[in-house]
Length: 467
Image: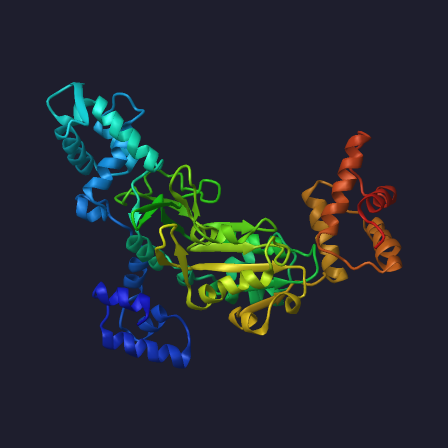
């Protein structure tokens, strides 16, 4: 049964019969299941939007966290090991658990003589100062040796799967106007824009290929900026008694508005839709959970960090691994939108593979992948050399951006004396490279940057080599 449909049935928004009719209509007419349900009048568009914007509420009981009290008390002990004296509010802030749950856990630790009260400003426990006892410090040290994770309380795997599904990148609607606006800083043909828009909106993998230096990476990065909305990701997930750290401050950018999370479970952090970019450094280990034998917990794989967002594999074919091995690893995830992870304990589990994947390569696709894999990539877009007219527009744009006055006569000299005479193809990156040389040369000689024949000659000789 369709996963989104199953959730809508669970929420009481539709019936099984209505889902069946919508799936039948989807097979005949295409489109997304949500839109088919709306078109058939089975669900209102505003109700569907509210479903997609649903956020996990703050848990008020142990059961609602999905964790057990033993796990929570152990996490608190590791947090407070080096805190000296502490208050309930400080522990709640560190663990991202409610005051009620934190207080309940601390009371258990007090009863078992692991923590004690050292004073307080009143009779309520919220005002008390606590510290670990010698017995508590000994236990906390043992716990830390078993697992060094000291961060927010994790969420369950089921909660993680459910939130990724609700925030699916396939639910993102990208309209023509937003696409044109996002790409207005690049010179791109109307035909390419018309193909990129539906490709982004589909949520399916995109294969960008063509000669180097013509904007494939710039296009991929711009797609990342187009993806609307924000998403919630957990700081960490617990699976089979193990902890997987998901939030990555290098790749995940929290929304700064402190009031934006409202009554949302603070174990989740509101971020911009993630954009993960990897190039030649990519290896197979980065696509699996990374277990640190010293800290004793896991770091999420790159694709897990990219869920609900964009995953760009730049310079595809130049990685440390054979392209075919990478593609074999991803055939099932791309097809079924589900990936499988393994713990060092032997446990295997599935996670959503919900992201817009972009492969960008300078190499000929047929030399990298077979027909079976290409079938699974619905959008294959060639980014070719610009025409002379497009190159002219790019050159003027780069001059304007760098405060260099465009000179028509010098531009014609560049085209005639170098490109046509030497038989060199126009590349979209050449104007940027040439103008950078002009700027550097001008700074060195302490002259205002100027587009002259002499500067063009120097730039060309410095930047280009005979092949």
